[in-house]
Image (cartoon, rainbow, N blue to C red; front, side, top):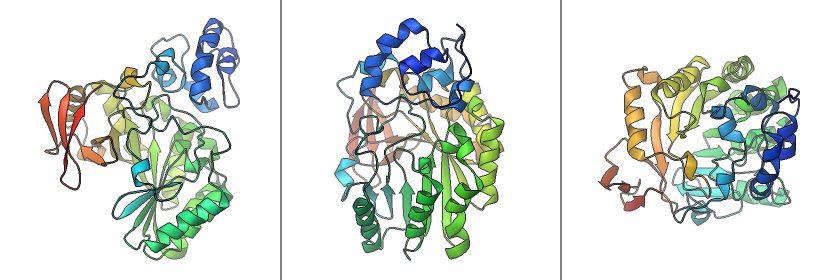
Length: 356
């Protein structure tokens, strides 16, 4: 299969075929998937894919798969229950001292396992209006218990530096908001966006108001840490931005001891503290990414003898229905039967969780 190296984001199966990332005869079969769930593979991510490897872990994260149309009964359009805790569009206030703020539902790349896959993607409702942003900021101002605002989406760092600076600046002006955290693929998947203007937009509140700004960089395989990605993360760290990791434990991507250890070491080497390792959520059409929780626990416990405490993430699952995260390697997660768990949320309430 001959193809030229992509220089821009690939957004449909035909473009993936022209770039040599899928066989041309597969394109038609993937059109139905692309019509349902957004597709975007950045030039950086595309360059990492080995099209001769049917099990390539980068391709598995970004290339559409017909299995995405095979929803299972337990899967949910809103698998972590964001809607239950949304007082105004773009805001989710699940925990007392922190809230999510999603100013955009557009991403520079679309993960095939995304838990918000039913709502992310380009379109008329992809970004909050000026009035909706004002309403979100008013909500944060009115709730003095909120000490941390977590920018999410979509990918909030996919916005222009000017918009990032305006949002972060407005949040930093709220006296009781001490920490602003952004979860993003940008530093790794589109590292060219991490320019001086981009860093200044994020780091401004640190210098001007003494606030803490953190970026949780999302990567799932050590190959994603290209020289450009490492340099982008270092630029953020040099500006005083706290760096954390965010990963998902994915079948066929990082569900072996060597890969998982290498991934956590790669984060530490880039200056990011391993933070969350997510068990895949019950998003529609993502069953082929999920592995048994018991298998995940074995992998995470195996990390303890392989990497230092600095490289240990917390293995978490979001309890469906909006009940928050639970650390699976803790007393809050108790196996009852094969595939059946009792999960205790942060308020002390127990919930049954059956693996799909």
